Structure formats: structure tokens, C-alpha cells
Length: 240
Image (cartoon, rainbow, N blue to C red; front, top):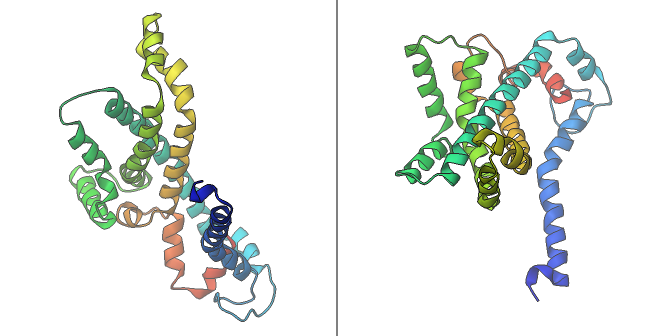
């Protein structure tokens, strides 16, 4: 009997799972509690129950605009990362070419390069290329850092797909695009959705690259960072 399937092993895994869930979500629960606290600072003891933070958030156009901006950036960059990541994954899995290991390492390099170095490099590139800073520059920067995550999700899925299914479709007269649309894409769809969600969350939460290439645009993480200097605005962020 394996340890993981034994009675004691099952109990240990359940206890570990509960600890993990508490570790991940207890901070979020604290933020929810503090959002109703009648105090500008998230500290105990609680002073009282209030919903003022939610009313202030509803009437704060700058905060709502920053959230909308982050959603737009995350949605666009996630689409770009998934499309480019899909193309790169297909080449890495389905094609045998010289230097594939080097290309794979290059595509995954944003995982190990510090974000601040990437941000400075992107800022220099945009300035040298005379590209305006704003939503477009943030989207391009987030695509760069999101592609590796998309590849790491899509490559294992492609490796598990039987290539003979695609070969059979081609033998029956389907072209490359038709084979991808009718065979590869439906089988790859769960991984595509997962890659999109991971890229979306990563982009929505990213602040370092957005800080360097935002121009006059303010994303939600940037707004959140700025509110740390003004305790009166912090409850609104907790309400979000």
C-alpha cells in the first residue's frame, strides 16, 4: 500500500490541505474584515462596523478607472500571450529543428530574469523605437512575461496529445489550419483556458513593468501602491 493512499496518509494530506487553504486565504479574509472596520488603518482591535469604504469606492472615479485599465491590459495581454505561446508550443513540440533547446531557454528566460531588469530594458527599447508609453506598452511588456507561463501550460498538454490524430486528419485531406481548428484546438482548449487565466491574473497583479512603461496610465496595482502614502484611501482599496 502506498503511503498516500493509506488511512494515515489520507488524513495527513487532508490536514496539509486545510493548512494550505488557511495559509492562502486567511490574508484575504483579514482584508474583508478590515474593509468593514471603522478605521483607516488595518489594525486590531476593530473600532466598529461601517460600509463607508464601499460608498467611497463607488464614488471614486480614479480608483474605478484604474481597475478598468487593469482589466483591459490583462485581457489584451493574455490574448497575445496565449496566441504567441500556442504558436511557440506547437513549434517546440511538433517540430524538430537545430537549436530547439536554446530557443526554448530564450522563450522561458523571463522566468529567471528580474522584472526590474526587464522593465528597464523595455523602457529603453520603447524610447529608442519612439513608441509612446501607455496601455499599449504595458500590454506588450506583460505579453513578454506571460508567454513563458502559457508555454509551460501548453507544452505538456501538446505532448500528451497523440500526433497520429493530426496525421490522420491530414491524410484524409484536411489542411494545416483545418486540422488545427477541428482536431488540435478542441483538445487543447482546456489548456488554453488555463493559460489565459494564469496570464490574466499575472498581468492584473503586475506592478514593476507597469511602473516603468505606464506613461500617464494608472493600473490598479499602481494605484494601490500610491495609496500606501495616504491612509485615508486605504479602506477603499480594501473594499475592492
